[in-house]
Length: 331
Image (cartoon, rainbow, N blue to C red; front, side, top):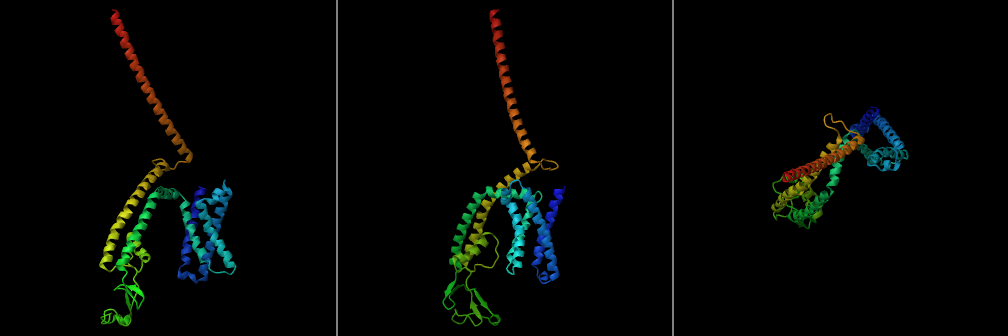
């Protein structure tokens, strides 16, 4: 019970420290000395608790090296070190410790190790690890698709090169001030020169690497709308890219989903007994597996004994038949 209360207390401190970190970034709290001091006191209390927890676990660990390189323990260490580094740098009169305050948010991930949630998260990690070959194939296909559609949209939406502006621009890539927008036309009589107050902007698809962003957003079915095709050819490329994204994502995701289902069923099988859903200790699980193996061996032995008994009965029946036949012949 004490261990459970300690875990709950650490969890509350993690949540409190994370909320404090978020509130520190609000403008209403930046220039108020009293609130800044309160946040600092809360941070000191949380860091003291995190430090005491880490040191006690380090002293009680049977294998120090394995403890230090454990991923969860590394997260614990990363969550407390930036605070001390920030204090050391601040005391030295140096600025630029914002990055340390950002790194301190890593302690939020320590929530993963509290309670029984870590087992479920481990199922996700195992599923991703088992599906690594499919993920690699998906990344290869994604890279190939991005390059192909970036090249297509580049040639379709690059626009025309204007020597006076030294850029590629489309007909819609024009920005005007208020005075120019008050008029009815944007081009002069030659059809190429813009009126005063307007200027051409560079096409977002001016190169294949610049087109990567639009292709990735389209393939992932996000569609921010910050870059859109305006020509008929560009819209055709966009339609084909949308259709390709369905095939690109559907097949790998189905394989990963199947692997997750298998891992989840395996986790539920070993997580505990049915009914009250109580979790079993590892020794009981090992004993359960051993008993299951013994029962299988016992079933196999009984099956062989039944087969042997049947064979003996058959031989006895044949022997009796032979004896009766000889008796009849002698009579």
